[in-house]
Image: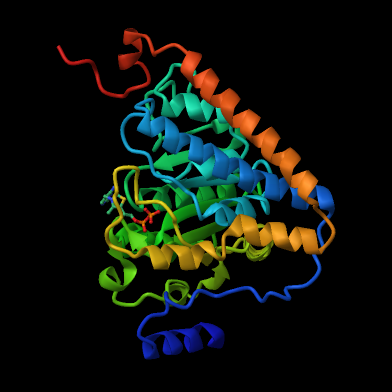
Length: 354
Ligand SMILES: Cc1ncc(C[n+]2csc(CCOP(=O)(O)OP(=O)(O)O)c2C)c(N)n1
């Protein structure tokens, strides 16, 4: 166990609430060392995810999207920052709040929107809906509706890469409520024991549905829990896309070069309800506004502008491009056919009922 980890555990138990104190990257975080194309792409991806999900909210209220729909708005820096640190052939697996990560991993906006609309052209032929996006061609191993279920699957994917000696890394996203599941602890134990190239990335947005982590977890310093398995861990400012990218780069290096897992805890916040049907009465508007002041897109825009990488005109052009892409996706979904009735029994393991 590293002394840094031990100290954090002691600090955490001394304070009433560690989650009230999100780590914040200092305002003078310094010059951006990446090339402009990389930085602009990162900014554009966050913008695409935000506008895509705003369109989802609109389409949901128009009745075009059925079932559940969990939006990622506010958490864009986590998915985009982490995935930007990966190779294209690395794996990503996640929960039901996955539209943003799917877009960042390279899935087509058209196929995602059509899936949300339940259309035959969707990535899961319209049978999965919002919670079950999947695209093997970009190594996106899916959104999963069972809280914590994907953590065991990620461990298996990392085991497969190690067994096949492919040097691929798996990143597993999950919410803080999933940390209370047995699958989380069993997976971390095995991953460290077998030295698996897996990054367990907890998006601590402080609420599991309407229950705050303070009411559901006896000890809320999630990164510190890695010490139980002697696993490397880090707390990251989940509103800072570059902090997310750099922490993931460190974890990727550990995974690829030393075949070791890492637990990352991204302190973040979701602006919307748990799902589209959540009126959000368990928190105040003031709390939401406090986090909106550190909006990941706004923060990064200012940083890019201060470093001479972006002008208002660039942003306006990007906004127009992204809105057009989202509108096209919605039109594609609208105009796509419904799945044929015969599709009901394809790609299922059970025999049809007689
Ligand atoms: C095993 C299981 N238990 C309960 C649920 C119901 N449920 C759906 S989402 C959720 C909260 C999960 O919160 P968190 O893991 O923090 O993720 P977030 O929604 O904040 O992204 C619960 C309890 C479920 N889907 N699966």
